[in-house]
Image (tube, rainbow, N blue to C red; front, side, top):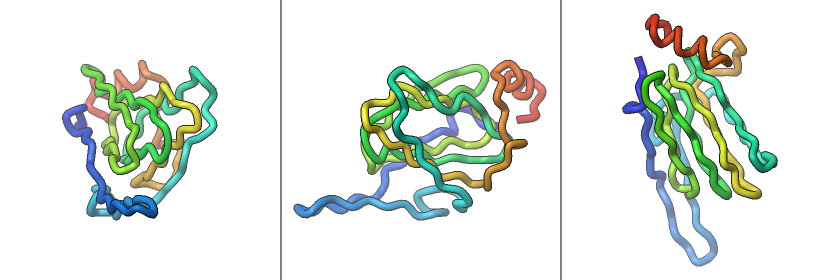
Length: 139
């Protein structure tokens, strides 16, 4: 069973150059899983939140490519908020945790890598269902 203790910020390689800096990620190295899905979130209106769900199987790695936002991670007993605002840091979120992304700055861009292909059945959308699944040891 995953807990918020399993969530971690991972510093990515960064190459500084007067012409512009470069960072990258590699699966099974910086990202602790094989990447099967990549997507990004952008143009989020002020005050809106994204996420607000848990996954049975999917693990995520989230990077703020531009701007900043908060990722609130919840294991059913504890919550912690991570502010992502540097493109050379990523947040690893294992499966079985509730997550919500909020507090998006203007022109922010969230890049997300997933360990699973999209499958609607992998999502838990209701927080009360999540709490029951956690209590019953099913997520």
